[in-house]
Structures are given as C-alpha cells and as structure tokens.
Length: 186
Image 1 (tube, rainbow, N blue to C red):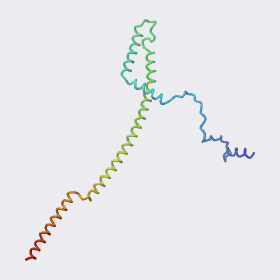
Image 2 (image 1 turned 45 degrees about the vertical axis):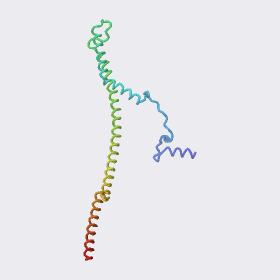
Image 3 (image 1 turned 120 degrees about the horizontal axis):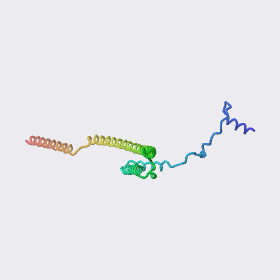
Image 4 (image 1 turned 90 degrees about the vertical axis):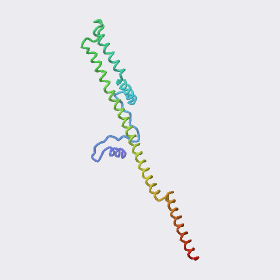
C-alpha cells in the first residue's frame, strides 16, 4: 500500500496533475513504425549526382533532341492508327514536364551535396591557412631573435679589425719602447 502511494506521488506533481511515466534514459527508444519506406540518403545522393552529371552533358541534349524529333515526326507522318499523340502533342508536353519535375529536385540535391563538400573543403583550407600563418609568425619571431643574438656575436670582420687595431697599438708601443730605450742608452 505504501509503495503504491509513493508511485502515485512520483507520477503526480505538487499540483496533483498526473504525468505519464518518464522514459528511461539508459535504454534506447523503441523503434517507431514509419509510413514512408526507408532509404539510404547517401546512396540516393550519389544516384542524384550521377543523374545531374548526365543531364548536364551534350549527350543528354542530343538524345533528348532525337527523341523529341522522332516523337513529332512519328505522330505527324505515321498512319492514323499508329499515332499515339496528335498534333498539339499534349502527351509529349506532359512527358517533358514530368522529366523536368524530376530533374530539377535531383539537380538541386546534387548541388546541395556539392555545396556541403565545398564547405568542408573551405573549412579545412581555412584551418590549414591559419596553421601556416601561425607557423610563419613563429618563424619570423625566431629569425628576429637570431638576428638580435647575432648582433652581439663577434663577426670575422670585427675580429679582424680588432686584431689589426691591437697589432697597430702594439707596433706603436714597441716603437715607443724602442725610442725610450734608445734615449736611455745615450
């Protein structure tokens, strides 16, 4: 009896409204029945890209033109009992409209897939460019630090000039010492 009261209290809030039991979060949901058939969107996308690629070729335009010419010629010059679409060619118009009504969404789907691929490629390029810029800035700072460090390092020309100055100074001292020793001997 106490367990039932607790269960009832858990399913009702402080306002007394009865709530349905909450689904458990540690278990997957039960699969729902779907009215529409299931399909693989990736396979359908690849199929739509193949169709869109074909619709954008000269081969498609040539075949479509030949079919329309044959259709019109057949329905004008064939014997009356073999004609299936009389002069205003309403059935031909219907078939072309049907083809266009399927081609347009398939082309749009293919374009959307291409846009998604382009977006991913551009994002990867942007990240690569950011890394390249960061690397370039790092190397620039390193080169500047090396230049500053090299400014304090003795170069060959500086050492040569210092040695020449020391040799010249020693020569002057030797000459002075020789002059002083010559004067002291007199």
